[in-house]
Length: 134
Image 1 (cartoon, rainbow, N blue to C red):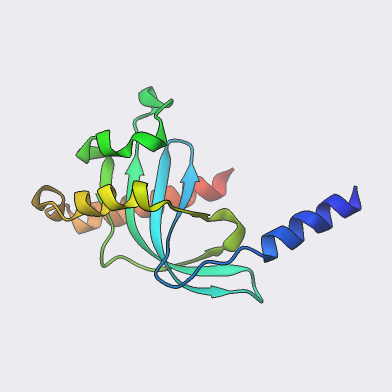
Image 2 (image 1 turned 120 degrees about the vertical axis):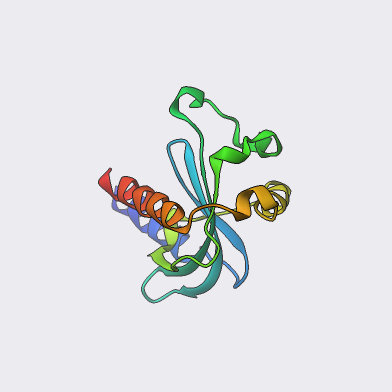
């Protein structure tokens, strides 16, 4: 079983993201999209700047992430000007351009620009706590 563990570690070490690449963390029915700022390979960490948090209500737990163009704007929490995070590299996934472009357009809408900053920061901290509780 030891070779399998080494293989997983080697694959994890090969994960590389480029600066400015859009990546995400997924937990249950929530996704945190972020911009990769810098990868710290020696520590297997990624410095990332959160862009938006999408929280699908639990009742819709079977939401298909490939249909993000149909998402309710109320589920999107823009995190522009929020705190950066330093996170384990292996937990990030690369976001596809096809899913990110509609989302970036969505957070530029006037409707989302009026979000309460303290509320968005609270939701980000809640997501991080939920992520580490399991």
